[in-house]
Image 1: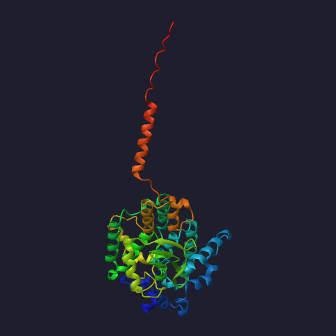
Image 2: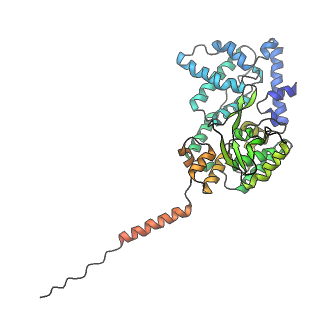
Image 3: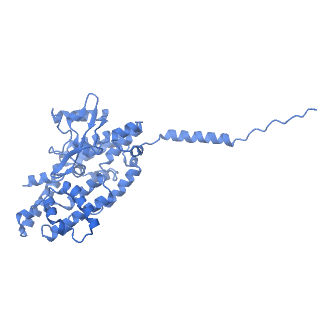
Length: 374
């Protein structure tokens, strides 16, 4: 039964003691609900089913203008991310990771606020029904993530790591902190940074997407939360794009293709148990927050791997229209935020202006005296 619970955990594929303890906690919640006199069907009812049956009670007293955004949040975000879980299996940690995924998907602050609000109300009804003891949806601190997102939009370069050596150090530290020191986590980090891709896109990469004759990756899909766990869908821009695979990671990619086997639909990157990965899975499996803080990069999030890659491409002199295609940006304005004029050119520009101003300040020579002849 524990293995079944692990299979239902968002990120349960990450393995390790923490995953098993969380699964035990969820199973214990179901057992306690049953012991409290609840019918087995109610104690194991999926969140989507429970919400549908009790939404009227959960949202009673709300104004009509509030109902639409709440119901949209439930239908479009809560059910795809959590609807497949039994109500007692939804913990504070599960909700916290889900909210972070919504923010990473760039939903607006008000959208996330309304989505959390409807989840809180449904889970509060579950408390009243005796299915759970404490409402796990009352998460805090998520607003701070939006400050990071705003800083990111203004200056994404500030979130990038400085060089290749630093990234290798980070990858090795994350592997060392993971359960059984799974090398795949380091491979994901290096690949994401060098291709400037999102973690969901890295997870969705298949062997057949890699052209080893030209070393090009055609980004066709991303892995995202959905009913029943993680699933694949089109890229964020709904269009495939091509990304170069630099020499530094070609041996890594070649080894992963060899390990994946001849099937072109085999995933290039998986968790230690062969399952799909996500940004939350990577964070939990590698103890990301503790590792980056110890290295002195406490600001660094998984999405900042993409910022680092785009910053490196820009500093290498890649033209902005090409950089936009690699990034898959819809707006050229977004891409331009990664551009940074060469310091030497800035210094030279200042010197040129100074020289120009010095000419303007120089005293003009007086005209020669006029000699009057008689």
